[in-house]
Amino acid sequence: MPFSDHRPERHFIDRIGWLRAAVLGANDGIVSTASLIIGVASAGAGHPEILLAGTAGLVAGAMSMAAGEYVSVSSQSDSEQADLARERMELETQPEYELAELANIYVSRGLSQQLARQVAEELTRHNALEAHARDELGLSGMTQSNPLQAAWSSAAAFTIGAALPLGAVLLSPVASVTPVTTVVSLLALAMLGAVSARSGGSPVTRAVLRVTFWGAAAMLATAGVGLLFGTTVL
Image (cartoon, rainbow, N blue to C red; front, side, top):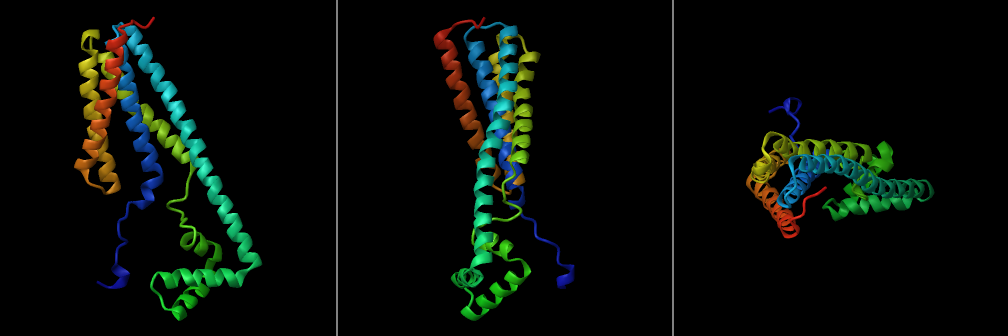
């Protein structure tokens, strides 16, 4: 096949920023809201109290996920920007040392000293900071942190995930809240595991088993707490 006809390869690494936040948010939305509902229902609460607890969990969880993702990813972004600023200053004050450093990186990856020096010089002329960010610091446009994207993805995914067990409460009588919520939530977790695995190009079965196991464990634990206390929430 001529090079001009070559199609770009399909990779999944460019999805890592939003995919991680979205999967985390959806998983937490399903698990935490379902666990809260099951725990309150197991304590003997009525339908309005269960619904109130689930709704409060959805709102609080979505805001918490958004704030947590924004703060944590912002901290990562601050570290990345500090490294880039330091690298920019070093390129201005000691360009020869930085050029030799870049060439040594390519030598360690298998290039000859002469070729490594030539590549380092070419990339430095093209965009020195970009070359050092990518090859020395491991930063690129695909993997660099984005706080707003992470916060929005996580909060939206949490809301969607939490709406599933909350919908189960709306559609089932109080006596069936626990089994219906459990089944709906486990099915949703299995689907989430499959979709996230397919989106990230990883094995589906392992992802499905992983998320359903930990989801079931969380719901079982909160059901035990509700049964232990057996107190209706007022």
